[in-house]
Length: 137
Image (cartoon, rainbow, N blue to C red; front, side):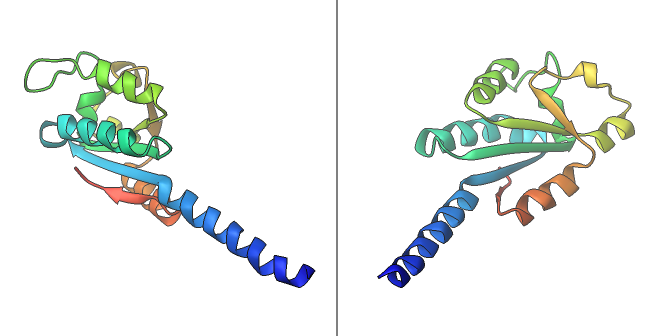
């Protein structure tokens, strides 16, 4: 009787592990003009349907701009409010430090909700290797 429960327990562990891996998502933003507003809307919709999703937004190149203090979308609205609302829902926003160096930007220029990663593309690759789904809005 005990041998029968071992495969069942193993199947449950594997199913739980697989389901957890599917809940991780990385959104890749490298151009704030074409991806900023759309990306934030996609993430909001994503969480409305799957509130348990673990979402990390990785930005580099011109994608970091929407996370800067005072950044506005094409309609003139601040990005700070929508970013803060998504952080409150568990979303992580990461800025590439290589971009900071290449563009002579400082951490102090970014929203307090932003965190930093040594390399945006390396971070994306690592998240995917860990099972995160990749989305580029």
